Image 1 (cartoon, one colour):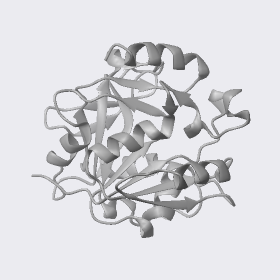
Image 2: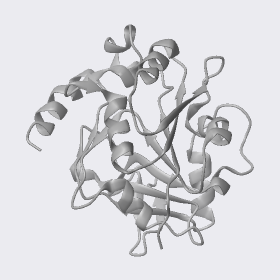
Image 3: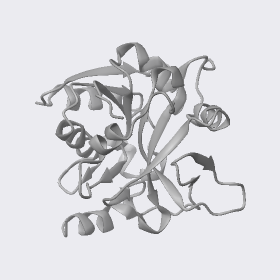
Amino acid sequence: MSAKIESAMVMAAGLGKRMRPLTATRPKPLVRVAGKALIDHSLDRIEAAGIGHVVVNVHYLADALEAHLAAQKRPFTIAVSDEREQLLETGGGMVKALPQLKGDPILIVNSDNIWTDGPQDSIRHLARHWDGERMDALLLLIRQASASGHGGRGDFHMDPAGKLSRRKPGHIAPFVYTGIQLISRRFLDNAPEGPFSTMVFWERAIAAGRLYGLSHMGQWFDVGTPASIAPTEAALSEV
């Protein structure tokens, strides 16, 4: 099956603590990597995929991020989900933005990752593998050995059908979440109040057998700290 993605959400409201001191005077999505703001790398990929509407959530130094977005010249509309009064974390942020998001499924992208496509456009690759009858969410994953700048123990196991299970505490899992996923609107049903993690939704979808993954065939960079910027720029210069 396949899906038409009408809108995307870029998660950009975090405090950027691991990126200090660069985030002392700017929000993390505006930290420059390879000649452009981090968030512009995500917006470039969304533009390449032909998506017509984008919502960006804001909190820390929100005025600077809103000004940057207002200056964009893109073939899609950009709306802001304002979390100035309360930072809602990833799950709560998606729930707040949902009324501004069009269509089903919806693309969700973290603003602090950079990726390059493999043989095909990664977002379109997700769309082609979407099956709303079986899935509540489809996550783009990368093998841990290929996750540049990522120091964790992995996030998920994936069976031959693409169904996901979480890494058990104290163990290692072969796949890392890239910060890119397609979600159905029903994925956000019956949400808790206030701030909470996307993990709440993932655990629920795993229990129902409706959380799936797809292996990323290009490069992926976790740009989470100042030290990760130079290696990322060096790798991108070779692409």
